[in-house]
Amino acid sequence: MDRLSPRLFDHFADLPDPRIQRTRRHELLDIIAIAVCAVICGADSWVEVEVFGRAKEPWLRRFLALPGGIPSHDTFGRVFARLDPDAFARCFLSWVRSVMQHTDGEVVAIDGKVLRRSHDRGAGQAAMDLVSAWASENRLVLGQVAVDAKSNEIPAVPALLDLLALEGCIVTVDAMHCQTATAQAIIDRGADYVVQLKANQPEAYAAVETFFAEAMRDDWRDVVHQTLVTEDVDHGRLEQRRYWTSTDAALLAYLNADDAWADLASVGMVERTRTHDGQTSHETSYYLSSLDGTVATVARAVRGHWSIENAQHWVLDIAFREDECRVRTGHAAENFAVLRRVALNLLQRDATTRAGVKARRLRAGWDDAFLLRLIHQ
Figure 1 (tube, rainbow, N blue to C red):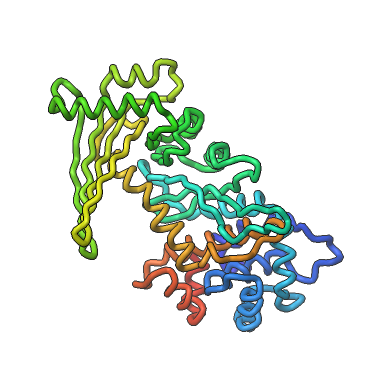
Figure 2 (figure 1 turned 120 degrees about the vertical axis):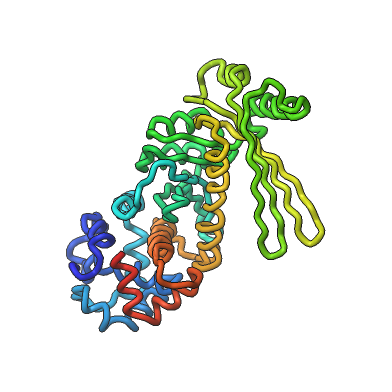
């Protein structure tokens, strides 16, 4: 395995094997390596993983033992269905930590995504919901946690935060996770937070909305604030964003009268105006933050949060067809999701190909040298 990728596959070397010793015809690390390479190259099911393995067997034998040849699709399915998803995710997390270039101020966006076709109605199994973390500047999926089927995403976020190295980062979450416990968990990890505020916090939302409305009405007279305006033009669409931040002491004291919001230091408002095909829309959002109110920093965090939708969730659905995947037995859906995120990280990190992720997957399947370079990153 030395010639494969110590940065990747060595992190899976201690993964517990769920199989009985006497039934093992294939090495677990061989199964993991074939699956990762296959998913990089376009495989979206266990049958396709097997087809890839058989087509690439001579090439794979340069790196893998393959004492039992290429496993069948049933073998891949059984192994990944039984593989401990928490242990598999920890191996993934260990690898990510080894390749991530940590920088202060890195925006880490946290959001949930439902694997829409992972349900099994006959067995009473709902579609799996995963909460994941995305480093917007490194363009890496940092980790994921499955949401308990009997709960919701809210308790999953602190569980995910506990797994991540976040010191010096700015963590962003949407309004569902505008919770005091989540803010505290972020601060406990040595990070700052920017959380969107909506009606799930009615008193705080009303106070912040009223504060900005009155400040703007009075032309910000005697109100400490900063402002920033940005514009983007893309494919005939004009989007203007106006940002305001404030560290108004009276407002912060009111919002945090019981000290429930850890290190609350500023509030923010973003007004978005989009014009496309003669139609104009407006949207206003409010934020609570532990940042010092520097408007450029808050603006970067707010923009960075949406990269998890554009660069992770959208790519997984379009380039990997994640929402169409019917892998669902046992832990297989959660573990296949890790395989996709390993592949996405490797493909996103490649700086040699001027093409989208889907085209890079195709190239990896056609070009052994390119695939080898990807897994050696």
